[in-house]
Image (cartoon, rainbow, N blue to C red; front, top):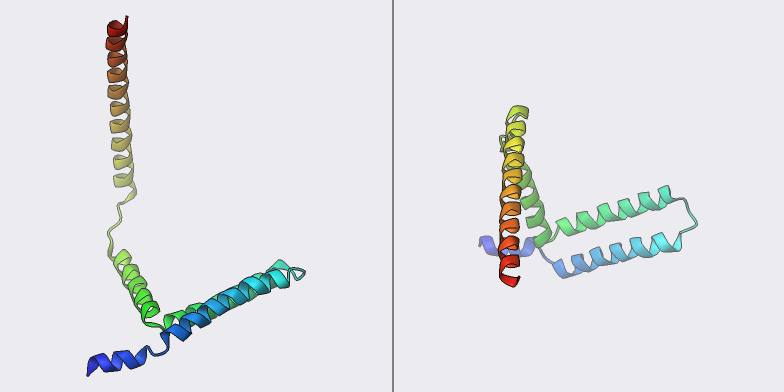
Length: 122
């Protein structure tokens, strides 16, 4: 019974996506057609059309699941314990030290193998 309720909730998804495409095309064509108007007015019109297209897209099954995913990702990002300034500085210094050390090791290996190759080649 639950599956039939979900099915009816997302009716006409194909038409909704077609409307989203038409709105995007209208924004593109309208921005080009009204190129003599100020950029501010054209930008506001494009933003308004984009908001309308996002609203229509959010009413589809895939759009609804995308917005649910974004909400959950935002909630998860708020739960992350971010490092403080001291931890960030210490980690950065460790990474820099290891990078310099590896660069020196690779330089020494390159020099050694170049010397060996020059001995072999003559």
